[in-house]
Structure formats: C-alpha cells, structure tokens
Length: 154
Length: 115
Image (cartoon, rainbow over all chains, first blue to last red):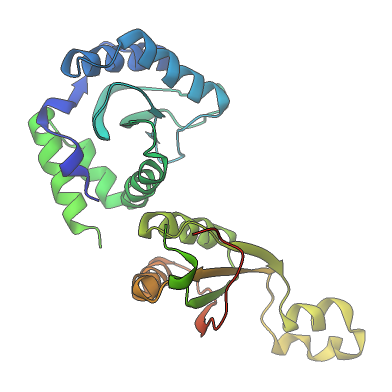
C-alpha cells in the first residue's frame, strides 16, 4: 500500500487563508467533494469534525491525520495539505499543525484504512521527511515530495 | 485476515521503552498484523533491585529500568521477516540504548479464531 497510489497532484494543496481547524476541514471537504461526485461536502465535513471531537488526530510533530469512512467512494483516497498558517487541532494541542494527511475510505475498508494510517504515521515519524514536505511550493511539488518520501520508506 | 491454520508462529517481543512499544504497534498495523497481546512485565533486574534487599548491594550489576512490555502475537510465517526488519529499523533509530528481544516459536495447535 503506497500513498502515491491513493493520491494525485490534484489532491495535494498548499492552503492559504485558513486560520482554524474547522476552516481547514471545511475547505478540504469542499475540494474533495468537487472531485468525487459521490461525496457530499457537508457530510464529509460533519464526519471529520465528529472524529476530531472524539480525540484530536494531531501529533506533536505538527501533523494531523483527519480520517473517516464514508459512503460514495470506490477506494481509499489520501489528500495532503500544507498550511501556510499552522492551526491548532484542539485546545489541548501545544503544537499547531501545518501538514495534513486526510484519509477517506469506503465502508468495509476499515482494516485497509488502519493499515494506511499506520503507514503514513510511520513516514511522518521521520523528521527529515516532514522537513522535506514542509518545503513544498505547490501541489505538484508536494505530490512529488510525497512520492519521494514514500519511496524512501522501507 | 489469515485464517487460524496460517497463524503458525508465535512472535514474542520484550521491549523496555513505552515509546518503542507505540512505534512497534504502529509498524505492526502497517505490516498487517491484526492482533497482539501486550503485557506489562518486570525483568529480573527490576525484581532484584526493588523486591530483594539481600541483593541490594549488587543491584548495580543490573541495568535500572522502568519496566518492560511483552508483546505476543500469532502470525503467519510470511510476515515474520517484515516484523524483524521493523524491529531492526526501530532499534537502529533510537538515540538511547534500549533493550528489545524478539523471537518466534512454532505454534503446533491453534483454536479460538473463526476462519
């Protein structure tokens, strides 16, 4: 299971003008719904919000992994965002996040979803990988850097 | 999920660092391991240090640890090597010396998972 198989340059963005967790999740929901006709932006936003409210998906390294299983997808997808302005994912978070890996999977794919989440989490434990992703200048560049880091991962 | 007949190895890992335990479990999930039992354990050195005053003067012979965890997981032979590679990778990335012991045992009979 490789991230580049589940994402594309069209699902990698540098986000500007977002200043809160909810702004980020709303904008990402709209972007993803625009590319997947079976997904409703409002449903996705609510599902992501509900998941975050059960416990933040952010890590001390400044990365967040919002994720949910949702109807309307044929396969799992990964959307990756770099935020120009880091945002807190919960009041308890000390480290604002500026990298987001948003994972979506169809119902019935929970184990694959978990495995993919673990795969991405392990890549993000490497400080050099995060430093590389944080240097991306646009969506295409971000996608290429993800390809590179995924390829470096054993 | 492999069926019960494929779960022919018991992988035993003893690790002395909670952070390493988290990394191991994350790696397990990535490899596709779907179950493990994690037991809080104490090593002999810790028992000698804490519970056996007669040996207190010699306690320095044993490394001071805060306890360890034992991870038990039945798995198919096909993922033993990725598990060992994972352990090599994780131990190799630690800045401090940590103790990780990993070995496998054959499982001769197995009951308890619906195939």
